[in-house]
Image (cartoon, rainbow, N blue to C red; front, side, top):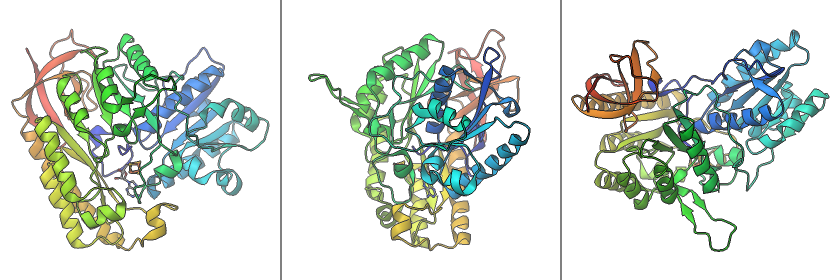
Length: 475
Ligand code: 5AD
Ligand code: SF4
């Protein structure tokens, strides 16, 4: 699950907005909803399921919060700061009620699950509270709230995958889409609140995944990213007696076979679960991008054990070697936590050295933030002083910047076939794309016949630590 979108330490060029405003006001509807999403890509994908459910009830999307009848905020609990941001935003939304007495405000996602009816009782910030497995009950909850009742559903499910709900693509570039393949997480990483807020792991029926990907491709999409907290443990067993089991490698292959012109990405991989079979499938299909997000969290075996990551430093390094031997040209990125409980200077040095060993192309880096109810909060003391955590994080960020620059410098002169995703953020005269390794590349719009969704060959000419710059060449 580990790829998160809201954090200042993350590389801006790869981030979405802190929230995803929905598409422009859908005029054919009388009533409108506004939805903002925080946190991981999974939340953004869930908001598209919510949008589909609300549309079925006659609500259209709007980008303008002032004209909304319903406001939803899809929340993240991963770090304390994420929750603070949401609270601030909810206070702002509440003020809109002065001019619109009918306005209903709902909180969705992990923070709803964690705080449950506390939101209604103690804080009186919202009218509706819905956990990640309860979105189907939104229509009845909205009715209850409109009738002045408390509307809460935070039941977690062992089965819900929303397999049959066709997501309404919000704020999409029409070229790349996220497809959720599983929900929940069975790993009990001791720092992580997700197993408590998103419940047990379950895999979505592979047929519905393939149908969704095919449908996207038919609608002109050229890239799908398969999403799950831990995609490599995808495992679908049908209720039909002789139907074969489908593993993540099988699923990846099925998606890749839809068309060679559909790029396939996935996130996130827990190092313990990514198999050789997955790596060989990646190597076999050119349209499966050569990129793995492989969070290490820490480079110290002692800390990894306290984190309950179930691998050692040496085991992780061997996994990196294995990836590089099967897919020699593979981008690897990571999540890293600085200052976990009991972390000493020598553990921190181990983290820096595993970063050098793995040569991450980029990383999402955080300092440890204790989350109530997690194993770490119950078992260990959050004993690394904040100043030390921040200093170590800074050192990690500085090293990553250097590694990213070195990795990008190696790209100069190389040619890549890339998918045009849209305009570059900074300059409308330039396109933005990503290489197979998930590196952002910008290049001038030299040929006016090119458009978003086209594949072009780009030669890399320059780079910064965050971005490659190139020019379109003949392949
Ligand atoms: N404190 C800091 N970072 C955390 N992460 C998860 N839980 C915490 C926490 N309590 C990080 C991990 C994970 C990423 C999504 O967020 O690195 O992979
Ligand atoms: Fe990811 Fe571990 Fe949290 Fe599961 S418990 S979501 S694997 S960090």
